[in-house]
Length: 96
Image 1: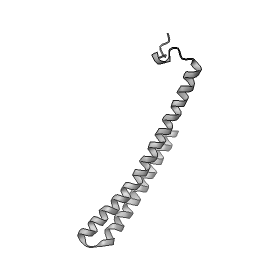
Image 2 (image 1 turned 30 degrees about the vertical axis):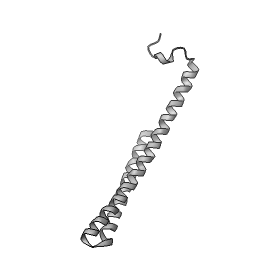
Image 3 (image 1 turned 135 degrees about the horizontal axis):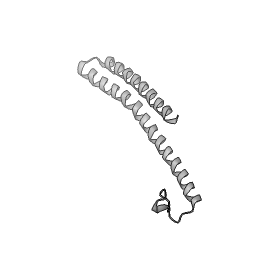
Image 4 (image 1 turned 90 degrees about the vertical axis):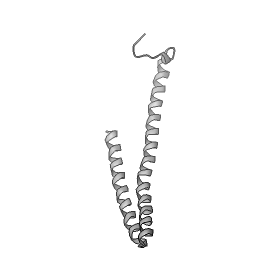
């Protein structure tokens, strides 16, 4: 018995084992990118929503309604763009 075989592969034809490995590899990549798209969505949405909510809270306490909401909303947008670019760069580095 070869050292590279596992107990699960015993009695399974070689052609079937190879097809199974290729299919599993494709599924792993699909789940990785599915999770990555969710990560990108949260990385974009949370700073924008957080900035707007925090700005609204500060405006309510300081009675300066649109000022801090707009400022922190734009700060959230900038942070989201930076985070998006960093995530895309890490994806491109992984593919090389």
